Length: 152
Image (cartoon, rainbow, N blue to C red):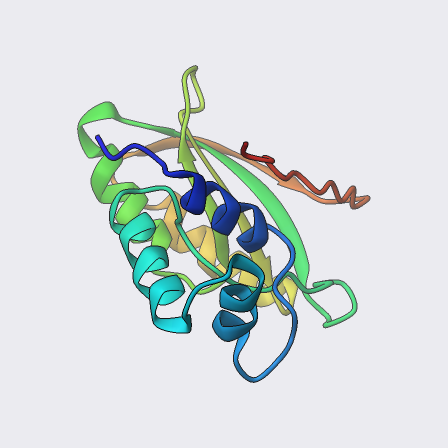
């Protein structure tokens, strides 16, 4: 297993919430870290390969953009879990998808532009052979939390 260096930890701290909207964000990070832009890019690629970084992207206020979110819990047959998760992941509106302990063992979030699209996706997912039952926990109120893991 790869052991994080002090440089990695500083880079991860910046990646968690301090990337400015500039034309060359990796150059900005390199300046903060006292290294070259290519070193930052190479290290991020290493951290992705090692599983420390899953994705780099922006967060938008989905409500303001006209999207509606829902949290979905599925009860999936254990032997069809991987196949089901891969199917769910194919939709661009899926933002998180996690296997969990308990009766409902696959949970994901879904953002859609309207109820018709959401229902179509839900019908496709819930008709999969591995899905035994589900709960659609549509958002009524949004709570935003900012979680950052400051690494030292």
